[in-house]
Image (cartoon, rainbow, N blue to C red; front, side, top):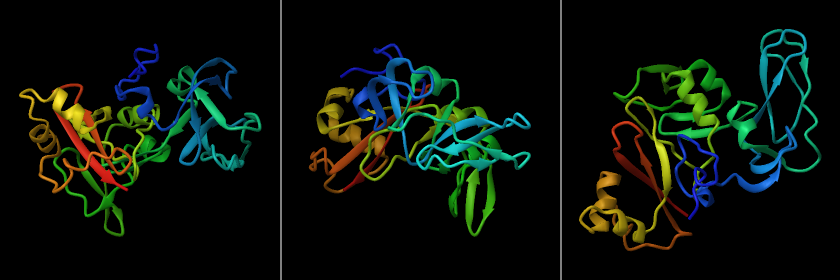
Length: 240
């Protein structure tokens, strides 16, 4: 299975096969620069960067509803750019340059452009962690304080294809790298001693009854992440 790196479009936080990205559209025409190259679809939870014509501040408008907005700085109208009548697609170069933001769900809550700029995740109820400082976001929700550059990197990364929605993991005070949706065969292949079941439970940090036996790929998903610094691997899972 081909990775994005093998296709010549390397993502530091996505080292899984290209088919494991839910928003990968293959070779297509970029709605921003018209290049015919590897592209990604922008839909619900994605935003297009638009610079205010009045004050020059960068704004982000919803790529799905394509509605105009008001500048977050001067409150003057900001128009959604014409990107064609079909699906909004963005090529690798435009995505990496920050012309769009792909919202991610993480273990510390949602991260969209607002959270990336503020350096605080949207949070989860009653969050407790020793990985990052935690702040009270109100109503019992607590966000993690994470450097903006790390959160922005997440928004310029493809989205893992999951059953219930991704939960991006962190290690060494940065986002981990997604390395794939693994089957039972993957765990048996990569297990240092050949014991795939034990390797799965080590990465999950627990025993989940029936998970090893349920190898129906469309029913159960197991998602593996690797820390780019300490090389520790961790997994999470979901089910239909």
